[in-house]
Each structure stands twice: as C-alpha cells, then as structure tokens.
Image (cartoon, rainbow, N blue to C red; front, side, top):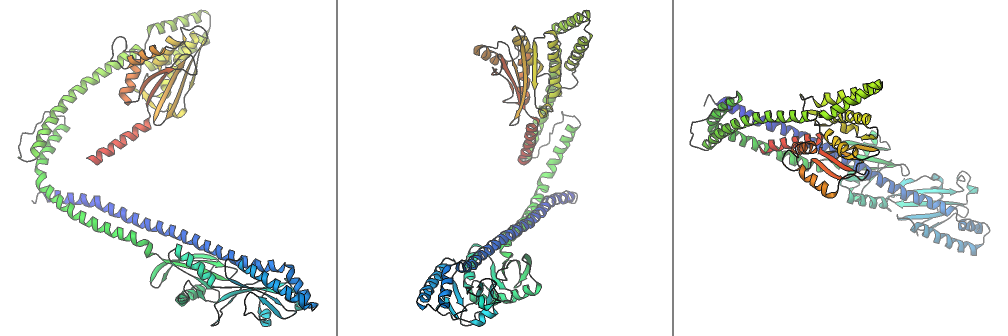
Length: 590
C-alpha cells in the first residue's frame, strides 16, 4: 500500500487538474455573463428611458403648440375688438366660439389638459375649466412661454402651467396685450405614462422636479422616493447619466434623463440582483456538482488503483518491448479476471502488428518500384527523338533563339519528370511542367496553342506529382494533333466547397457518347496492359488518395469541339479539417 500511494496521489492530482480549470472557466464565464447581462440591461433601460422622455416631451410640445394655434385664430381678435367696441351681442357670440375652439384644441391632445384665454382689456377669462377665474396676480408673476410647476396643494393635484402673451413681446406693455393663453396639465398624465413604462420594464421610476418633489406611479409612493431624489439633487444631475448605486441596502443600476421643458428629471433604477439571481444560482449549483464529482473521482481513482494497477504494469512492460521493436514479446501470465481477455487481445495485437510491419515494408518497396516505373514511363523516347530532331533542324537553319528556348523547356520538362526523391509537389510546379510540355509542342507544331487560367490561391495547393501532364498529353495526341487546322488546349481551375477541380479541354474531334462511356468504364477497371497508363494512372491515384468523389471524369466540351477531362480532388484545408475532426472524435471516443 505504501509503495502505491504516490500513484493514488498522482491520480488525485490529475482529477484536480481536470476539474479546477473547469471551475475557474465556469467562474469566468458566469462573471462574464453577469457583465454582459448588466451591459445589455443598462443599454435597454437607457433606451427605454429615452423613449419615455421623447413621449413626454412630444406631448408637452403638442400642448405648447396649441397656444400658438389659438393665437393665430381670428376669433380671439374678433372677441377683443367686440369688447373694445362694446358690441355685446358679438362679444357673447365670439366668447362661445372661442370656448368651443378651446375645447376642440384640448380634446386633440392625448393628455388631459386645461386651456384658457385671458383678456386683460376686459379682465375676463375663457377656459375649458368651469372653475376658472381671472387672476391678475398670476399674469404678473408668470414668465412668458415657460412651463412652471405648481404643487396644487390640498385642493387639486400638482400640475404644470405655461402662459403665452399675444403679441409675444407684449408682457412688458400691458396696454398692447390682445390676449394671454394658458395651458395646464396635471401630473396624473405623467403618472399614467410611468405606469405603462413599468408594465414593460422592471424596476422603479419617478419624476423628480428641480424643487425636489417626486412623483411616481402610485401617489402614495411619492414620499418613498423623496430621500433618493433629494440626494440626487444634492450631488448634481446632468442632462443624462447613470450610476451603480445602493438603494435601501440593495445594489441597483440608476439612470436618469433631463426634461428641459419641465425642468425635471425622469429617474429609473432597478435592483441588479433580480437579473443576477439565475446566473448566481446556476453557478452555486455547478460548484456543488464539482464537489460531488471530486469526491466521486477520488473514490473511483482509489478503486482503480487497487484493482487495475498490477495487470496494467505487465501491459506497460509489453508496450515498452514494442517500443524498442520487439514485436515477438508475448504475455503468458493469467490473472483470472477481465484482464485475461486484455492479455489475450494484446498477444493477438502483437502478432497482427508483426504481420503488418512485414507487409507494409514490402508494400513500400512495391510502391517505390511502381512509382519509379510510372515516372520512367514519362520519358517517351519518341517525344525525345522528335524534340532532338527539331533542335537539329533549327541548328541547320541558324535559329539559335529557338534552340535556346527549346532546350530550356525540354530541360525543365525532364528535370521534373525524372525527380523521384519527393513524391509531393504544388500545383504550380505541375502547371509549370505542363507549360514546358505545351511550349515544346508549339515550337514543333505552330498551329497548336494553349490557354491556362488557374486561380493563384489554387496554385499553392499540394498535389501528387504528374497528374496533369498525362491528361494534357492525351488531349494533344488524341485530340488536337490528328485534326487538321488550328488546335487549342485550354486548362482551367476552380476551388469550390472543399474541392479542387482542373479541367483540360481540346478542340479536337472529341468522342461519341458510347466511346466516352467505354473509356470511363476502363478507368475503373484493375490495371492491365491496356489500362495501366495515362489517364487510368491519374484516376486511380486520385481516387485512392482522396477517396470517393475524387478522380477523372469525361464530358463533351461546351466551349470547344473536343473532349473535356476534369480532375477533381479534395483541398488541403478540407483534408486538415477532416484530420482534426477525426482526431477529436478519437479523443472523445477514447
């Protein structure tokens, strides 16, 4: 037992190493979640508060404009003239007309309000309120075009009032005053809007006047906000602001917005705990679960240590023998439990590995031999003889520039095709080889031309060597060269949905559907003397390397008159992602 304790301690340490980062990460995630919730909640509350502010200002502005509408009404001037001329009949008629228009203007607002017209020349007042009386002291103390707050006292609810003189600058000259328009609205209108705001947004809100009065949804609750409102005014308020603040012993988020027309602030605050509670409860539950997992992990590691350590030590010794290349090692000891099956399978695995190593070694030799033969097959003696004959003819004609170009392209072609030390290449190298090959043919047969259009990104893809040249050679030998007249070979490339596709088209006579079908069938047959070269080689290599969907396909060329041969294989990015997903799946299943 003493000898084994360090292993138990190590297993315990592994469990803690696995779980502690999870606890730290979850703590970080929960803290981040709370921060995100706070950020979104604050943005939402601010937007809601600004929306409420805009609604209140819109209604106040609408009431302010009602006095301007009345000032432009000719009935007021007609009433004023009738009073000056003492035309009592018309005066009564215009008074009724003015009162009717006051009611119409009052009803046009969403808020309940009271509109009045003061006529200083006759010391009279026409109002939508039946209790209105002419008050010269009110006219003397009021400012022109400014909303003033009135507490209302015990007789009526608090309200805002604004007086506007007509003409606007006539307040300082009482003799020139035609009329004074009064607009009032109760703060019950604001309470109603606060009630709608509360229905859509959790929290507490109230209106704070510059004089310190507070007005909330419930009249009985105005006093509970008075202390908070007084402290806010003492600290000083801007046009808009927010802060984390402790209210009634709770951490809250408080925001406010200034109403310049009313010289008051809309204040809203919400306890943060009601937003944080679900995240905090989830975090605490996670901590309890982690403690239980640690306890269960410790118990499991102890049992594992008691019942697994000894048989595993023998397996480890066998694996170490495999590491040094001794695949003939076998386990003969019996444990008379489930580990006997593992020992038996271990011995089977050793025999299988020993057999596979032998087979793989021989397969590598065969693959190297096949690759060498395939590469050597590219050294076409007829092609070389034709090129040398062309160089000899050009030398006789004194065409040294052509000889240099021909030698350059011929050297580049054979340098690449005979290089066997690296079985991988980029598509750019393959295209350069084909360009050498095609340029050689354009020297020999001037009627042949070619076009290559491949995206630069695709040229960086890794491919197997010598997959494009056999297809291009086939296009020339069986497509363009036998047909009289100008010939064209077009090579294009595209990348889409994790696939690379090269297309080789020629302007030859093409093939019939039956011939094309027969050729496509031969590409799928096992290697024999008839099929074991050219496009068959390319198709088989692509298919075995990249799997289903890869290989060579044949169609009629839409742009040209001949055959269209497409080479398709998976992109490096897709292959990398496949290996990553496979590795992750293996780790999860393991």
